[in-house]
Amino acid sequence: MTMMPDAPERNLTPAKIVYGLYAIGYLVAITALAGLVYAYFSRGRDAVLDSHLTFQIRTFWISLAIALLAAVTMLIGIGVLIWAFLTVWGLVRVISGFLLANDGKPVTGTRYLGMMAY
Image (cartoon, rainbow, N blue to C red; front, side, top):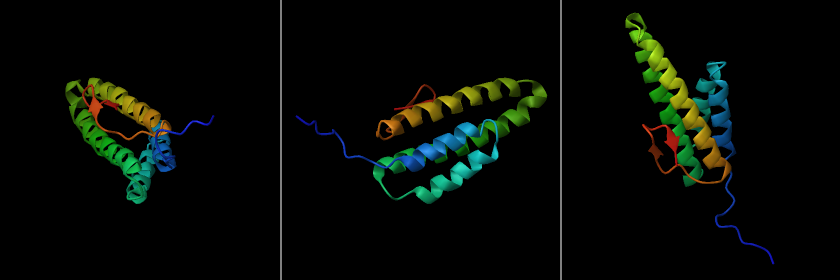
């Protein structure tokens, strides 16, 4: 007896590549920019893939805004706390999004201050 899959097999490889580039971006920042460009060029193929790519594009731009805020507030000492929050926030988004992509599921929203994709 063969089991029928619940959902059609989707090619979410572009989303997984962007998640990987974002993860490497914590060590080599330019890869996050490469991931952003790749995400923009990969859109429009599939609704599930697009949910991940939109999530990733938002992750990049929100991260950039938080990083700028952290840099500006370094002068008053709170910037270090903002950088720490950004690191945790970004890693949770990358990991939770990758796990959804690996399971072939779309990103339908976020929880916990926009940290975790579900």
